[in-house]
Length: 563
Ligand code: PMP
Image (spheres, rainbow, N blue to C red):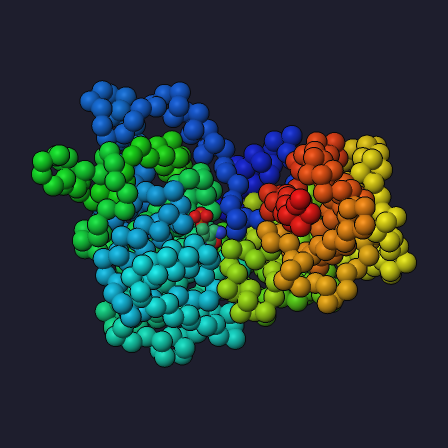
């Protein structure tokens, strides 16, 4: 077993280290500081190389052909199944089903098992902190079977509340779904207790291990859960590969999820089709062969290290980051006290989480902002969203220092400049035109400067009266709250007033309104917004959610001015 040395460990990850293109320059300016590992981890060179090796040397379909190349591919594919079985200490390879990821694993269970065992009035318990992937599949199946979802609340430390669980659990409970660790809260849920208690009423446990699997070893036999699901991409493996661990006895009686090649034993147009044995019954069609084989590289990579040493390093990083953040007066943690894994969620008083995240991005720091696919949790916490820093063992203390320095600079700059906001207001008729915006942007080359320019533009936007920020003016599809209202003069010319709770969106609103203000409905309809955005070099820098937000603004304007 290798001794864990963070510097040496980092060397294995070309995207964060050693790749000059990405190591030195992100968006032309800053070093990449990747603190979004909860979303997906970076990949070690061995995983990346495995793809090339596979396609150059053993590419063939698995299980079906009688030629040696296919045999080679099948052996490597099935060896990964065994590697993963050993990794989580499952009893048998029959209990390891390949899926696309955690999401598909849960959909498979909900669809197959849910339909089989749920009846009217049966109950499914899930924690309020679950990822949408562990909520929506159950909502769909509950609707079809008329089962009922019961929501488990959290205790003061941010963990699934065992006292509340006792109150919810009864003999109508058929399924209990709980994340090992929430992707926002970073606290280890008391799943052993939940599993044992669930057994006492004969219900089934499904543990979402998406966030835990990269941080400590998991033994499904010791846990004694019925299902444990996770994604390869969150543990240095490729995207598009997921694991569904299920107890053989349960998988055996579950009907197939998808149908097609490979999942059958016999197909007849005269008699009933019979299904393949486990785990193939659940693996219809050609799987992600290269991905699965590369996943073995990721598992073997992790297996080389002493996990206790890695965990210790992660805890040191977490503590360092947590303490540095706690010294910033405006930072409010989502859960008090240190998280159990390197996932820290917080808000910054007086600042929208998207503004902080986009500003950090302009310094090359990648963090996540928004609802984190946990909207019920956001509602429970009474927040619209938050920031999340999630670290991996290749992150360094120097990176944390840089992140904290950038964050403090952003908060300071925003505070200083917020004084100017009121005096900078410009009435709508005197707002900038699209040509002026294009001219303004034409000399700005880097995203960092563009970002600053958008934030400055945001200050010109006259704030919308609170009464006008309502359901009618709300722009649906924008991740932040944003509103737009239109007035039309006697000549049929439109003027718009708009606002958002995020500064970045206010800046983007100025840009969008510059294109549409003072135009008739026909002119608005025929304005080529894509060419306009292209000339500003905007869309390629905005994240898809922010980009969709801009398009949602355009859609709303087109809708309210439609002739
Ligand atoms: N559950 C949790 C707790 C997660 O963090 C995630 C990913 N953010 C998922 C489920 C879904 O994983 P995937 O997108 O890989 O299917």
